Length: 604
Figure 1 (spheres, rainbow, N blue to C red):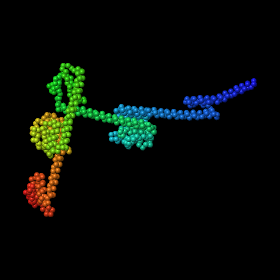
Figure 2: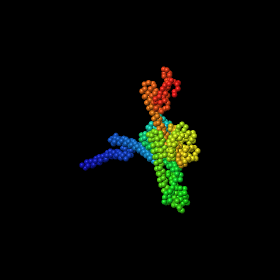
Figure 3: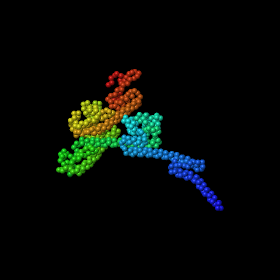
Figure 4: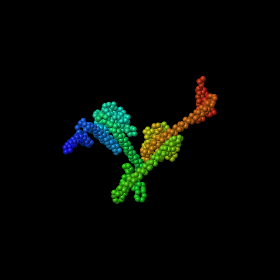
């Protein structure tokens, strides 16, 4: 036993040592493999792996190495995709920001040229295109004219007013003509591409129509040095920008047109107001009032006394002076507060006077329109010429005041009065005639076919009065035109000199054309009545003649009917027979007398 125990202990130690050696040989590769796995998991793709052998550990190490290589390639691919996607997102963000800036500019910028200039540079900077341009169609829609460009070549094109024929020249012309986008990813292979010497580096081009309510107003053109430079996202964003630019251009144009019309209306209102006040001043050259603290009195030359201390402020309407407001302060100068107060009062007075004038003008215009409407109704309803003329002269006084008026109708080279009003005995003047060539005013009216105004008839050599006309001072004559010809004249007068103005002449002339139309209608009605009466008479004579059975009865009936219908003193009917060539002369001097005579025998 004493021998066995030492030997057994030795064997046990040897076994333990061998076990430890075997364990280390197996565990160390596994530990190294685990450490490498941890390093690879941390992203260290080049971590060392145990040397591959033919045992299980070697096979596991080889498999782990292959898996690591695959993971490394997959990770690199994912990183590349993420980087590419990140770049795309950044580019798209820049483009969307550019679209947002264009939208803000479209809403804020009212100057179309500024908007177009900023838009093309924004597109070039944001999308990386070396050329961006905007074309607008001309009024005739025949040419697309370059309005803004971002490149140096585009600036040269702008300087020479570059334009392309719509529907015929280039990708821009195609988009402008069809209203559809056109993209050339390789310009060399696109038949519509226009080879522009100012843009020699172009490899791809895109033209997007600028449309408002399905109406093309222009084209957005972008060009790149790279082939196939436009993605679907680029097209979508640029089309959105094109729509925004088109809407902004249309809004700016509408705003410009509206402002222009407002300026025109404002200028027209100022001019009309000025003319209105000038007409008032012409009728009442020294028009004004004074107030002495007790009552308001008409201003006279005697009351218009200038004093040393007097505050005078202008009365103005839309910048046009219409008068003055003067405050007499006695023996002291005005204070600043009094000046401000006087100006405020003057402004209120000016507005009140303008409202009163406009109301008066409106009432006057309504009266004129009613008078013209009445003439129009008379033209269609009252067909008796005398009634029409009397109604016309009555309505004329509502348009242009007068003391007397005469309406002359032309009879060859003579003018004859057919209606008059305002005279003590108007009927005494009806039928009065005057040769046109002997009257200078009538000759001038017929020759020039324009109104003639005489400020003071008693001092005008052209005025040739008749009867008691020494009181006539102001005189106005207008021609009555029908189909471009003078058919008559309308003459009016006043006892006051300088009464009739150009405005009065215009109104009377317009009134006169209504008169000419009414006269023409009345004359046509009278002619129609005469024609109808003639046709009726012919029908009656023909009917009675057909009822007669012998020649003598037919002749007698014809002579009798014509004699009575026309109120003749004598009627002669001559007939010739085919067989004998004899001619007879029936004669009737009264309804109961008719006879025949051979041809050539005197009729008595």
